[in-house]
Amino acid sequence: MLGSQEIRTIITALGTSIGEEDYDHSRLRYHKVIIMTDADVDGSHIRTLLLTFFYRQMPQVIDRGHLYIAQPPLYKVKKAKTETYLSNDDELNKFLMTTAAQERQVKLPKSDVVLEGPSLRNVLERLVRYQLHLDLLKKRGFEPALIEALLARDVGGLETFQDADALEGVRREVEKAGFKSDDLQKDEEHGRYTFEVAARARGHAPSVVGWDLVSSIEYRTLRSLEDDLKDLRQPPFVIAENGFEKPVGSRLDLLHHLMEEGKKGLTIQRYKGLGEMNAAQLWDTTMNPESRRLIQVSVADAVEADEIFTVLMGDMVEPRRKFIEENALEVRNLDI
Image (cartoon, rainbow, N blue to C red):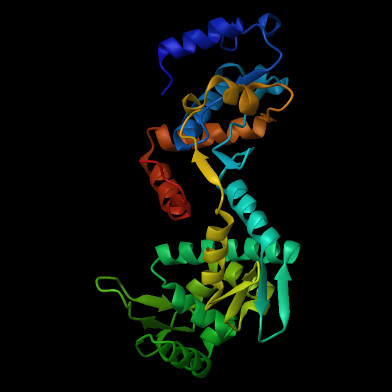
């Protein structure tokens, strides 16, 4: 929470006072009011608090376009004498993909296709998304190998789960992939069939293969990506670089190997806070008017921050529980 001393400091610095009756916009001392917090999770929390404060106590600062958010980098990547600052994990991944694609080829012997440059980078971008959605389903208890077995059979239509014979065919394919499964069960209320697949790791609950899984956004995204990655359905794949070749046995092995190769020769520094930068770095990355990146805050941004703050910090338990249940599985980076 913002303490009373911090609030008094902000009010004094801006010179406007606060509240509907006392606020005087003509006394605002600055054309740009910039929120500058760390690029990590803690910084995001503080930014939400500040946005909520301005929305509730100084709304005209937002309405008249004076409030901005600085974009400090989360990473510094150095190669030889060249330094690059990157704002987040997504930018880092794209940087590594570009580096890997510039210096390597991927040969697909069974289709005579060679991926390089932009075409290889596009494939890597899709593989990163593919890995992300596999991981999201894994958090829900579905093993990646099970999901890939369903994708290989192109399981996706509702009719498959309304037809016992069709789903029985799917169940047999899943068993061929090395899983143990139970007989089909019918959901009489919805007229659909499901079957359970035993987890291969001890202590894990079985997974239910049914319409709820196949209709999820994660699975549907994976199914769409399958079409984009059709050239990578038949391993092995061969990575070629400087006259040397290395075979890999799966599309995800290809992704992991190339992303690691993209890191070679690089020094990657992750900033936990702005205080880790020296004065010159802080000026170059975050404060220099000629090179800094700012996002102008809109009313919609402030409203969203206010809603999140109210849900997470308010007195109502049920909305907070609902928010956590709906968003817990989406967390990718958690600072503890």
